[in-house]
Amino acid sequence: AVVSTQSTGKLATHIAPTMDYDIPTKLSMEHADIANTLSRRLIQLRAARTLWHKDMNQFMDHILRVDDEGLSYDVFPWIIGRVRKGEKSSQPVSMGACQEFMPVVIRFLHSDKGEHNHIALVMVLSLLERFWDQLAAMSQNLLTSCQSGNLESLYMILVTTVERVRVLQTSPHEAVQKEAEAVYSMLQKL
Image (cartoon, rainbow, N blue to C red):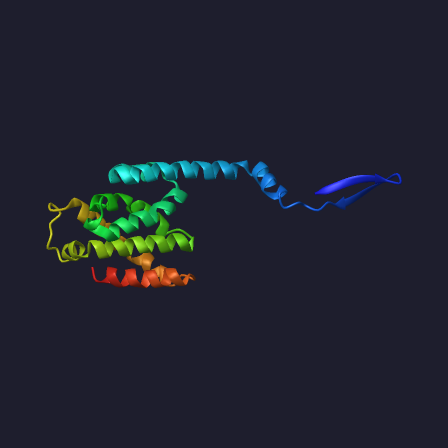
């Protein structure tokens, strides 16, 4: 902080020491928009958590309707956990719900943020592992589209990610590279 004092008829300026306790106050006053953003995000996250425990379809609808990058990033681990648990989960994530969430996954795959790429790749790998038998059968034309529209949609979306996943294998982020290599390997088998 700059403080002016008058001494001997001249205006003297010196730097007053900033007290540590002033920093949060100044930040909150100067950056009210950050506080508002975080508050909105917390409200959305709480709403998502409530729906998460009640109804998976309402939860997914909420995430897609809100269409907030931060909220999506926050809930990715929740969804991945349920995808990995499969039918053992108290509220398993259906293939249809996974298919509906794929636009968010694709957006994160194409992000310029390494952490977004990584979480999207983990999601894709989890989907491939969870639905591997059905996806592999689909790739061999053993299932007709009449049997599962969700399966066909999920299969087509996953197959279209091959090129982006290939590119992510050269990411400067080691975690992204490793995940992309695992996903690419599985996608090549479809």
